[in-house]
Image (cartoon, rainbow over all chains, first blue to last red; front, top):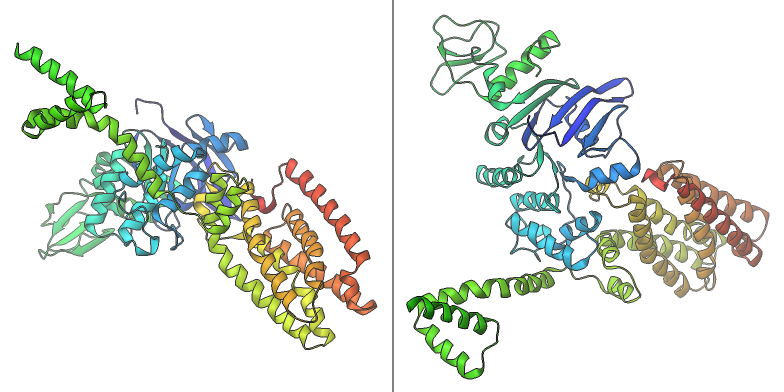
Length: 295
Length: 273
């Protein structure tokens, strides 16, 4: 990374009772989109809550644009000013209109001048393609439109740090494409973190990827390098590879295997982000720790 | 020669767009524009910068959320536009709380209407607790955009206090009116406002130590104890009599001082730092 990172964490640790949810996480997020992958319970939600200042860590630090989110109230407020956040579930009251919801968040984001606030609300609604639905009630919106509305509030004030938690869950392919386009437009001006279970989103949208498992960073690097980690471990063959992490019969009739030993009649297959992710999780659960892949 | 004409044309069109040409010149420019696509294109380019800001202001005005009658009345009394937007968003609280306070108070009042002492006790017990529950709910609110609120730079304490105001405004008048129109309650419908004030302030103070739910339980238990003691010792209405009112006022003042001290030492109610 050439430019200084926008977001930095050092030794970030969070425990719930005796369970360690996050264990000494070091991350640097610069401009561009970073995908955050990890199984349920890996610590993704905890990491997001710490990065968005919703919670304080037990140890370690979060720094955004040089401000310590873990410092005093003033520094935390400064971090919040630089932050745009789309939670996993945004339960927008159904009787609110698009404009009144975004207006409400704009007030929380300290847009005190009424004229400037209204103009900004319209700007972000135009940005997500809801400029002609400003007076529509939330209950009349489709699922995709609600997602875009939730995204609109995160764009208020063009924040330098965007955190999106599962932004494409439950969307059809066309809506997902539209959402990706919106998010990628921000990548030139902001550090964007996208937590997701959708490995296709990472392949389509992200420059870099972070894999979290058991509260620790298992991988951090470019998506291309991540895919390359399984280049010689994905096979198409008549039979499953012995000791494979995962294998399944494809539409062509061949068995596609990830990991394990090369089957005799194997043809090489083009690896995907999902292959690399499954291989890494398989190795993690078997050995506890993956050697040599952490960036 | 041609370029001079074009230049003059451009200058004339610019003056026309800005409204600096007289009626005769304007009319001839318009006549020319009807038959000249290239000049129309020039005018279209000139009009944008003039009209666009006006148009976006018009759109912003149209899209601006309409506040409820109550909020608009408060705005006329000096409520700031931003606070109005926050209070209006908390409107979803009003309905359930107004209904809850109506049901609670109505049932208590009906019980007292039947003439039994137990009914009166029920009314005296429940009415002051309604606003307290509202105050606690304003801080506890789990679902209402909590993720966004907790990560916004706006002070959560200020927001919670604003919501408290919204809830109290929504609950107290209903409880008073319902109490007052039921025979057998009369002035008692106003007399419980002072203990309610004490209990609300106490709940806020307790919430600087305990979570909202624990604070609610603590305050409810305290009030029930007071009512039971008065009911056991004497006529139950002494709990709202003149000497008791004085005690409540003093207690309210003490609780207010304690609350300010706690908030100053950065112990906000509900942990809303």
